[in-house]
Structures are given as structure tokens and as C-alpha cells.
Length: 107
Image (cartoon, rainbow, N blue to C red; front, side, top):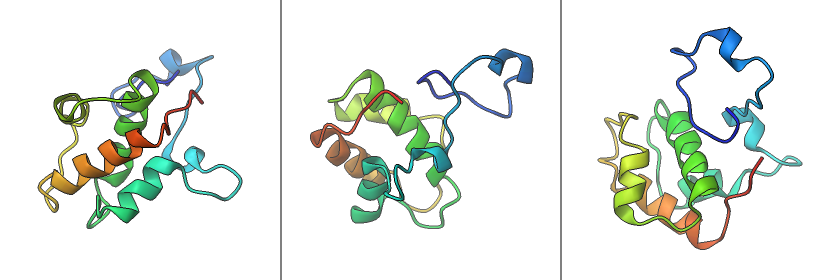
């Protein structure tokens, strides 16, 4: 919401009024995946797909604010997303790789 990751399940709808909302589906541009999405695929940053949308949205919000985060900053940004499949290593690698390509654009 307005470039920040928020928990949609915890946000009362009236607080979203007038805000710019971007969902995982809204990251595609002209039928092309967002570079963060592409990096998750290329670096094996997903397994079952259950946590992937939240991880990507948290990553996108981080990279919008901080295009070149440290590994510690990446881990902090995704800390509230639980993944039971990957152990986070490949997710963190995917986010750090995406940051190298200056993929963070304000949307």
C-alpha cells in the first residue's frame, strides 16, 4: 500500500481508501514478469509457492525503499513471512540478485 508492505488480513478496508494498492498480480508489466519475480524463478527462491507472493511483495517494498540492501536488511524485511520449504537461503539470494539489477521502481 503506497509502496509499503502491509498485511491485508489485518488492515481495515477503510484505511486503504485512496491509497495505491499493488498486489502480486499487479507487478507484471505488459505481460512481463517483474524482475523480482524473475529472480525468484532463476534462483530457486520458491518451492511450493505458498509464501512466494508475500516474499515477493515484501522484497519489492524493500527494494523500492532501499535498492541495494545488505543480507541482514533482506532477512529483516522478509522476517514476518514464513517459508517451510527453502530455508530462506535461495530467497535471500534471489532478492540480493534482483537488487543488483536496479529493479526497484516506485509503482
